[in-house]
Image: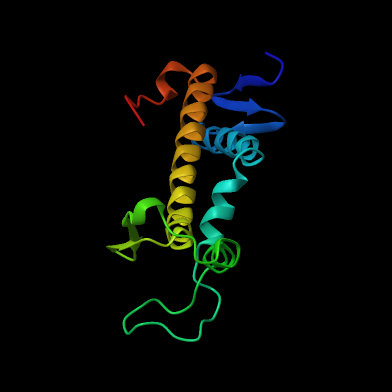
Length: 149
């Protein structure tokens, strides 16, 4: 093989020699993760932009201090836009669900959750591709025998 070989019970992969099975999995995972990052940097941006890092004038007692970039700019752009027909939408606030009719609030509260979901799907894709690629390269006794991810 041109990029993958077996040498004295260890592996050679893309210029890395004498790799143990664990090191081979790590290198393949990093390779697949780097490939994926070019596509799904949106997940990280959604998570980070939804964090409450900006200061605020005041919030109700017990509320998380600060506000997020998404919250600030969605309120600027959407101003006082409301949901159609005054529908009250449940949104996550910490570990509780609260209802609101403000479109900006709905968007600001769900963007970080969409980011986490996207990150979970990215990690699933990377892990599955890593397992498949590793199992093609590895000796039968070194293969990963996961039934599902």
